[in-house]
Amino acid sequence: MIELSGVTKAFGANRVLQRIDLTVPTGTSMVIIGGSGTGKSVLLKCILGLIRPDAGMIRLDGQDVATAEREAFLARFGMLFQGGALFDSLKVWENVAFRLRRGALKRPREEARAIAIEKLRRVGLGPRVADLFPAELSGGMQKRVSLARAICAEPEVIFFDEPTTGLDPIMSGVINALIREIVTEMGATAMTITHDMTSVRAIADHVAMLHGGVIRWTGPVAEMDTTPDPYVQQFIHGRAQGPIESVR
Amino acid sequence: MSLLAPVAWAGRAALHLLAGIGRPTIFALQVISHILRPPFYPREFAHALFQVGWFSLPVVGLTALFTGGALALQIYSGGARFNAEVVVPAIVAIGMVRELGPVLGGLMVAARVASSIAAEVGTMKVTEQIDALVTLSTDPIKYLAVPRVLAATLTVPVLVAVGDIIGIAGGWVVGVQRLGFNATTYLVNTVDILEFWDVGSGLVKGAVFGFLVALMGVYHGMNSGRGAQGVGRATKTAVVAASVLIFAANYVLTELFFTS
Ligand SMILES: Nc1ncnc2c1ncn2[C@@H]1O[C@H](COP(=O)(O)OP(=O)(O)O)[C@@H](O)[C@H]1O
Ligand SMILES: [Mg+2]
Image: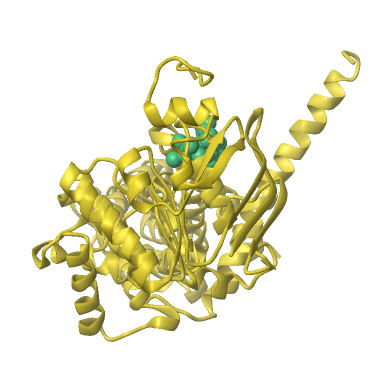
C-alpha cells in the first residue's frame, strides 16, 4: 500500500504540490488525471525519491520511503517515464533487460535477451527491433520499449507516466489491456498518469484528479461519471467552459 | 531593508562561491570513494578509454608537433642573442615534457572530452535517463562518473607521453631541417639532458588534469539545467572550469615538484 500524507513540493515560487493526501491499496490500479503542468509527474517522482518533497510523508507498506534502504526499495519498482528515457547508447534489448544484466538480478546474456524479446512481444514489438538503437525507432515505439523495460523485472509497484500518449488507438488498446493484465494477473500495484479517458476506464480501479496542487477528487472509477464535482466533470468531458481555466 | 541589501547581496555571493567550490569537491570525493567499491562497469570503462584516449591521440599529437617546432624556432632566435643556440635541444625537451606536453595535452583533452562528456551526461539528465538509471537500481556516479573519470586519469598520462615524444620530434625536425643541427647530436643532447623526474612530473600532471577534465564534464552534465539551453550552458561551463582548473593545478603542482 502506498500512502501519501501532506506531500508538498515547490520549485522556487512555483508551488506545484500543496499537501497531497492519497492512498493506493496493494494490487489495485490508481489513475491520476489532471491538466498538464499540474504536477502529476512530480508526484510520481516524489514517491520514487527522485525529487525530495519539501514536506509530508510517503509510506510504502507502512514504511517511510525517506528512511527505507534505497536498493531494496527501488528493486520493487518499475517506472515508465513520460519521455521514455531510453538509454540511447544501448540497443533496444539491452535497454529492456537493463536490470537483468547487472546487480542483484544479473543473468547470462542470452537468457536476459530472451526475456527482453518476450517483453517486447507483449508491448507489440517484434524481435526485429531488439537489435536496433532507440534513435532508430518512432516515438510511439520508444514509448513501448520503455514500457517493456519498466515491466521487465516484474516489479510489485509500477508507475506509468502517460503510457499511451503518441500511440495509435489500436496500440493504445493493447497497452491498456497489458497494464490491466499486469495488475489483475501479477497482482502489481499500479499508478498511471493519463489524459486519455478511454485509458482511464480501461485501466483504473480508482481515479484521482490533481488540480491546484491538491487531490480535487478521488474515488472508484465507476463513480467518476456521476460525481457532481465540476472540475472532474469538465475534465472528463473535455469542456472549454468550467472552473478549470483554459489559459494556464 | 535597503540598507541591508548590500550585506544580503555579499552574503549570497559568498554562499554561492562556497557552494561552487564545495559541491564539486564533495562530488569528487564521492567519485573517488566509488572507484574501488563494486559493482564495476567494465564495458562503460572500456568505452570511455576509447573515447578519451584513443580518439584524442590525433589532436594531442598535432598540437605537440607544432608546439615542438615553434618552440625550437623561438629558443633558437632567443638563444642567438647571447650565442646560446646550442641549448635548443635541451630547452625544447625540458619545456615539452615538464610544461607544454601536459598543459597543452590537458587543454586539448578538456576541449574534446569535457565538452562531450558534459553534453552527453547533460542530455541524459534532461531526458530523464539519469532518473531512469536510479529507478533501475544503478548509481549514476558509479555508472557514469567512475568509468569516465578513471579512464581519463589513466589515459591522459599516456597521451602526454605520446605528446612529449611527438613534440620533441617536432623540435628535432625543425632543428635539423631549418636550423642546421646535426640529427644525431640533437638527439644525444636531448637524451642526455632529460632526467627521470622531468618526464615523470609531466605524467603525474597529466593524470591530475585528466581527472579534473572528466570530473568537470560529469559534474556539470549531471547538474545541467533543463532543456537544450541547460545542456549548452553545462557544456560551456565544463570546458571553462576544466581549463581554468588545469592552469591552477599546473601552478600548484609545479610549486610542489620543482621548488625547494
Ligand atoms: N526539475 C524541475 N525544476 C523546476 N520545475 C519543475 C521541475 N520539474 C517539474 N517542474 C515544474 O512543475 C510543474 C509540474 O510539472 P509536471 O509534474 O511535469 O506536470 P504534469 O502534470 O504535466 O506531469 C511544471 O510547472 C513544471 O515546470
Ligand atoms: Mg507529466
